[in-house]
Length: 148
Image 1 (cartoon, rainbow, N blue to C red):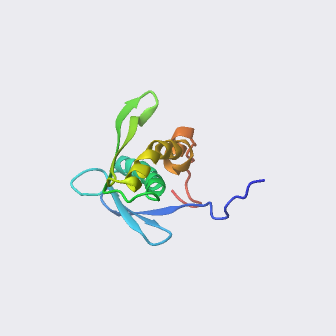
Image 2 (tube, rainbow, N blue to C red):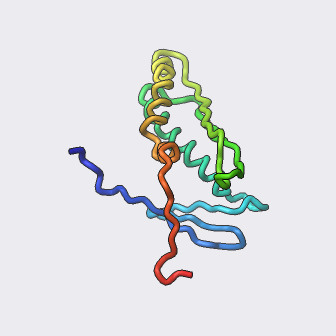
Image 3 (tube, rainbow, N blue to C red):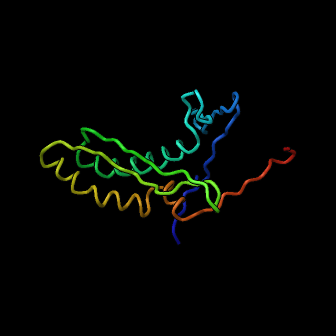
């Protein structure tokens, strides 16, 4: 029997703060903002989704490669095409591209050598966000008691 962590539950609270603008707050008090993509700088939900995939995979890859050497540059681009078809609105052609540079020398060589395996591990089992997308977990939408 495998040991499961007791702190599996995750949640955020989303509050409307203006016309087509929302504030998300996590349990630790962190905040981020969402909008419809108009004039404000807020992330759209699709941009936040892409950022979540990029951040999740980056944290894993950096954690693995960073044990060998600190990257001189580390950037990640997540992208996809938003389409509407018989399945409704959704993203296709999702990709995450890493641009990482390590210093010359033995430590940098060791970090470069683990990158293919680090990408494989984050895609196959480590990144909760991309794994959830790939596994296709359904999302239940419901009203709070007394809501509506």
